[in-house]
Each structure stands twice: as C-alpha cells, then as structure tokens.
Image (cartoon, rainbow, N blue to C red):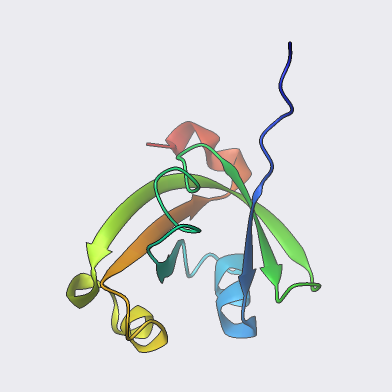
Length: 103
C-alpha cells in the first residue's frame, strides 16, 4: 500500500517577513513552539510553502534546520510577537536549489 506524499508545511507571513525571505535577507522563521510548530511538523527535509498572508504570492523552500530556543534566547522580534511563549521554534528554510545543504 502506497502512502500519499507529505504535504508542504504552510507558513503564512506578514508583508515585511515574506519579502525578507524573497530577497534572502532572512532564512529562519520563528514561531511559538507547540503542536503546530515542533520537531514532527517541521521535519528537516520537508518542503514548505511561504505565503504572503493566506492568499498572496507564494514561494517554495525546504526546512534545513530546526531548533527549540528558550524564549530568552530568541531574537527580540520573536519575543515581541510571542511574549507568552516559553519556547520558540527556529525553523531554518533554504531555497530548493540548496537541497544539498540540508543538515
């Protein structure tokens, strides 16, 4: 019995962060660690679809790394967005041609 291919992880982003990925000035997305953003859902090698909001333009990436940070070790921008989180998921995202660089 064959299984269906794994769906891309969908990552909606605000305007500023979406274009930062597009210009390659950003390569890590930070989310509150939990049921949606964890080692299982953010498996290294899984493809991801970055979207400007929920219905805007999209780009494809691949998860190249995953780390769980204590809130105090997260970048200030992530702390501001997730002030009540105890842990932050740091999701490294690489462009698809960079697949050979996946950890």
